[in-house]
Amino acid sequence: MWFKNLQLYRFTQPVELTAELLAEQLSGHLFEPCGSQELFRAGWVSPLGRHSDELVHESNGYFMVCSKRQDKILPSSVVNDFLEEQVQEIESTESRKVSRKERTSLKEEVIFSLMPKAFPRSSLQFAYISLRDSLLVINASSEKRAEDLIQDLREALGSLPLIPLVANNLPIDLMTQWVNSGELTDNFELGEECELRDNADVSGVIRCKNQNLSSDEILNHLKTGMHVSKLALSWNERVEFVLDEKMAVKRLRFSDLVQEKADETEVDDVAGQFDVDFTIMTAELSQFVTALMSAMGGETDSAHQ
Image 1 (cartoon, rainbow, N blue to C red):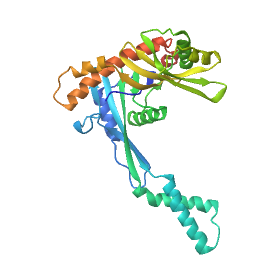
Image 2: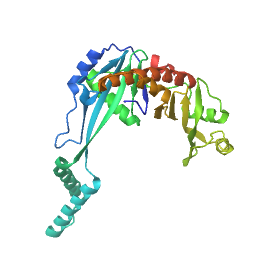
Image 3: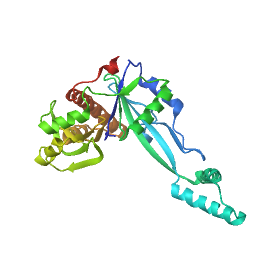
Image 4: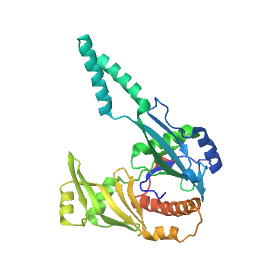
């Protein structure tokens, strides 16, 4: 349940929402498996999986939801093999070349015939709504997966006034400044990993791991005009993470101090442990995101216009 990635979005307007109302809206868009000719399906399931039927898990004003997506896996190599067999058969039996337009039509027929046999792959995407912080926090490693979940939420709720969380300072400029100076604020500290990019050369990328980021080698790269596009950081001895140039938080890891707080609470079942973990995680992330935005120079005014 503990989030490993954060895609952060700001509500631009006050949202009137309760756990009951949210669950009611999501119930009209429940997950169902793909039909025989569908490439994918997405819908809502309980965040607790088989341990609960509730579509929304609420704790202290935070609403956890879970989107399930099923994709049909049809490897292009398989499609091409079947396609080539049909093309060769036509060219052999009819003594003629298959045109590009006919090949395209044949490929569509091959895909249609193979779809019922395609292997389904399922994935879960967790997110929580924080009305007190006016945030939607999505545990997604890519912006695309986060946007897919937001689209599904909008289909269920009708509308959702959201924009990506944007800082006053560009992350790439601020991360470069942090590594150059070694000085960070709001209890943030440098880790031992970064990615350097040369703006003048798209292919100019240097990835540094298990290194002292204040070393002369890295600082010399910055003097040549390279910028820090990804940076490992820690905050307040409570979380470690990698920040990228789009302000996405990757490879988030909570410290033993935080994890032990969850372990100290005695619960009797899976649902109870989920609630404890969720309560502690959201409290920690609320403080963390506030500190991160402060360290980034605050938030742009666009979210509040």
